[in-house]
Amino acid sequence: MAWEGSTRRSTLSRDWPVRRRRVLRRDPLCVLCEQRPSTEVDHIGDRHDHSEANLRGLCTPCHQGRSGRQGGQAGGQARAARAASRFRPVEPHPGMK
Image 1 (cartoon, rainbow, N blue to C red):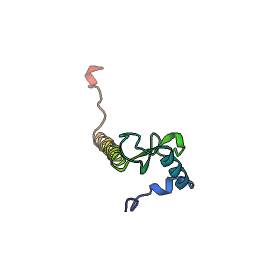
Image 2: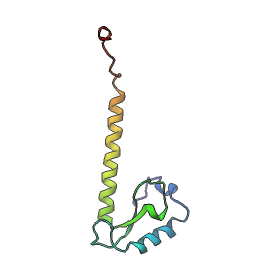
Image 3: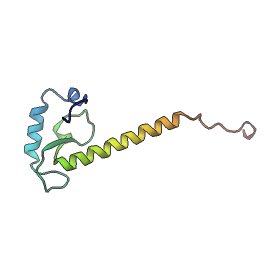
Image 4: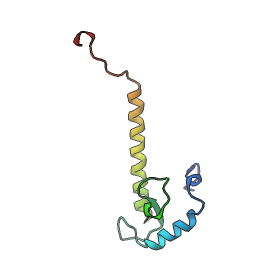
């Protein structure tokens, strides 16, 4: 199951099923590829903003691709932050002041 092990459901608004239905009705075709029916709802920007202006309907392949890219970017940023924390900041040489 897609939600197994995820805390995402707890961050959604109580009326999420209603909002989801409205967005899928508003966007019957995938907003990205415009070829397949919308089956999933995507947050355009802030993932905690559940307003309908921040939501759009996507097909499963487009939503999986977008989510995968976002996860890859987040992982890359986390790895870069961990790597940067292993080194001391560069200090100017005492004789070069």
